[in-house]
Image (cartoon, rainbow, N blue to C red; front, side, top):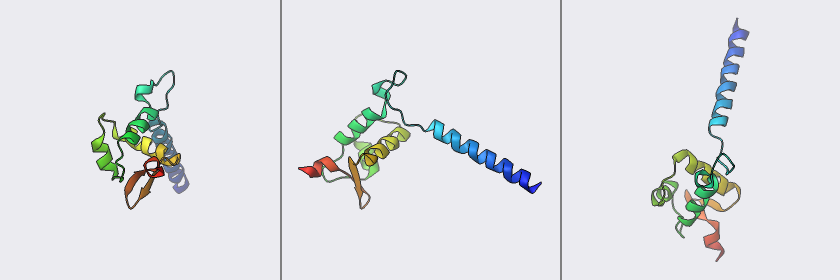
Length: 101
């Protein structure tokens, strides 16, 4: 009985994990997702609005001229960090290109 309960719990956890993975997939442009709704567009908007001195994530979010869904904003930040376009220093997000000057 205990093994059956553990097995059922693992199945529920696996389902939950797969569901969250599918639901939070990053929106890359395709024939189904136009550029205007893609992570690439959001990345560019974010990069243009990071102050030269850097800023906290919430400050940058509030500076955006075009509002982005929070989940899409986080996806874009993760992508920017992954490609090393931004770095985090003392909880400040810094645009690496601003400091290349």
